Length: 132
Image (cartoon, rainbow, N blue to C red; front, side, top):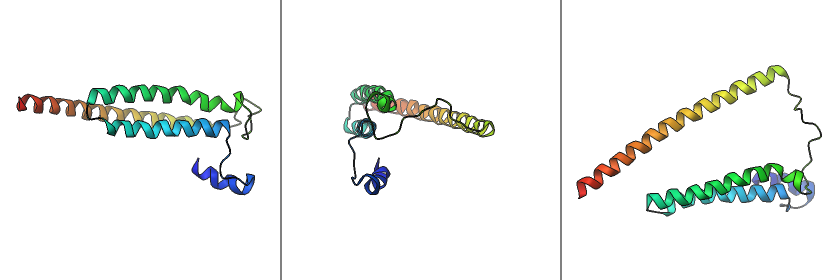
């Protein structure tokens, strides 16, 4: 969104075009930023988790809208004419390998983060028990 504005200025003579795809992506970007602000804004863990989950669901529902915005509304962005990507089969293998690698790495990070969260919950529970 930011670098696109620098590109759009000399081409369309405007910094921002109220294009459906740009607007829906801008909304999704604010949902994403709002999610992190919301996570820091509440002291009650359960309320924070509940509101963040609702905002996460809203953001998840906006993703297909961003993807299909150029098909649903007139747009300055071009439509794809063919369904095939025209990717060379050798490059497809590399793409699929790197995709699988990133998915595995993300899963590993999730497992580590889940372990840290469980340990943090146990520590909070022990601290609350000792304070009583």
